[in-house]
Length: 68
Image (cartoon, rainbow, N blue to C red; front, side, top):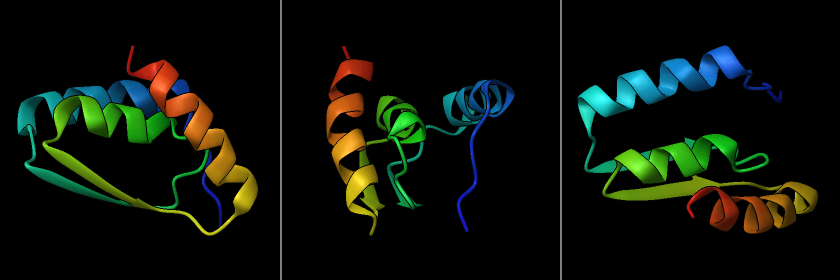
C-alpha cells in the first residue's frame, strides 16, 4: 500500500519533528523522498527502506535537491 503525502501532511511533519528533534528516524517506504528530506532536516540520522526501483531512483534525485 502506498500513501501519498500531501502539503498539509508535510506541514504537520515539519511541526512535529521541529519539536521532537529525534536522534534517529526509520522510514518504511521512501517514495519520492519528500518526507525523507524533512526527516533528514530534523533527525540525527535517517534510515529509509524502499523496494520499488522507480522510487529509489526518484529519491536519489529528489533528496539532495531538497536538502540544499
